[in-house]
Length: 397
Ligand code: PEP
Ligand code: CO
Image (tube, rainbow, N blue to C red):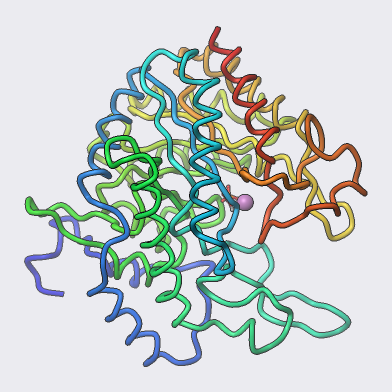
């Protein structure tokens, strides 16, 4: 990397490599990994920088209280996904949710899917054990295979090439579905940093952008201030999401926000709370207050999925009443703190899946078996998601 491409503050697309990194797969063949990185560095961007820049403008308005962010899609995409169907489904679902939400909100509805790059998953345990056999955890199709055998679970860098190709196709279909003026935008967790680094590109005025997606977020497990993920994300100009779980302190939030965006640009960062219905009332108000006192120009959104997950046997279980309760609490807290309730972050599918309990979905644990399709966490089905959009619209009435 030549010196002229390094920011005055020491950032460059590979500067994360000097920081401790979590959740990174161990690639056995370093030379194969480097070849893949080189190929991706010359590959087509998944998104247009102009559109990522326009999202920044929309988010700056949102920070002032105009509009609402609807972000949602699969927990994890899969190489087996039928792309055309997938795109038609998610666009149709956004249309149906927008029909409920758009008339209720003041300002534009910003639509961002978890799609065209949502292939890498953080895992709580490095190793998965069955009947005395331990294998590396499945980390998403961009890293390894879900099947429980040693061959599938080995991290394969070639999977990045396949994920990139599928993402380019998905993003193009998404743009074509509605026309470039109003496509549903793309987002994913910026987890697999060799992939992100290779797709980081410069615009004509010298700013760096991730071209792997319009909006990238940092997960609750990789937000350590000195860590590699924070280092990477602080250098790109895209809107950056920050997942905030119950363990986040006010001090951590302020340091994280200061590190990710010292210039305090309005709407550059969207804080995505995911505390759980039982913990939000205690966890969120101090964070909002600390950010407000520090004068930070943040957008606040709620992910009511990840904090409302429990285990029943080997199944992850999420219940619609908990999901709605966390959304209601988010709106009440934001309003009490004088903060605009700026958005919603969901795991949802356009299909009639049976993954979350309640509402127009499965009523019992047994019903979950009927159409459980997710590659990772349980998603709302289309009817549950549309009803939820109606519920949120009523909160704006
Ligand atoms: C996710 O959004 O799929 C995820 C893993 O979230 P979190 O980092 O909030 O746990
Ligand atoms: Co998830």
